[in-house]
Image (tube, rainbow, N blue to C red):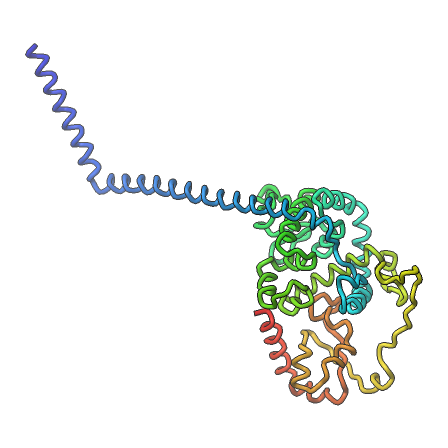
Length: 383
């Protein structure tokens, strides 16, 4: 019994010494640092886990918002058609301007459109089916023509990829996989399905197809800012407040959709007859075709007073009117396709700019000033 008590005493003593030794070991500089590092690793794991959960919740919320938006606007999307040139009920006073733009666009881009027309035979049926299944107008497939010329391998300087030119973030938000091993943006069916989701989302916010096309190009934030500045949702009112590239994007889309829908037979020649009815709304109630009189671009007097200079960068008509006292309406008449150059969709690197002969000397003297003021003008209207 005495030996048993002694054994217990020594056992307790050993346990006490071991406990204290462990404590003293932790107090040593090297071991203390290891313990602190271990605690930091645990805290980092906890924080990372919390952040991952927060991100998941945000993405889940975004998906829920989009799903609600899609459900809320299904009927409107089915009824709303993409506007085409000649549709006066939509374009109103800008209808003639839009039709002239289409003529100029086809003449400048008929070679590219011919290439696209060849590619379209194998791509458009699938795209039509996807758009139909997502309650979207079939004309929206022409957005892929503007984005990539129907090239699934297209890559932009800023990193947009595929026929619909998705950026990584938007692609992932629309359910595409984008990583080092796989990029669904190049997959025709998957990217078209994702584009349909995104177009539905944009329409729920914009409620107008031209504003949807603008948002697809520059993002909905810039379009909403233009709406806030103007108090309007009319593209023509918003147009000066949108980036030049976006303005051109929308115009090119309408032109391309109008050409493929109603004027495809003119793509090889690149010229639309003056008397051609671009849209059913233009026909008379009796179904008669009203032939337009051939237009003379310039009178003999205008040609005598006209000079041509070559521009590498666009100048503002407003600046030219202010600095050189040239009527901007005259410049608009003499340079009917100038907007293509301003919006960076002109086919040539230089523009043959027509202006009065008696203003050439003043133009050369003020060329630098005109360039700087025009650059500032284009920037200011977007601020």
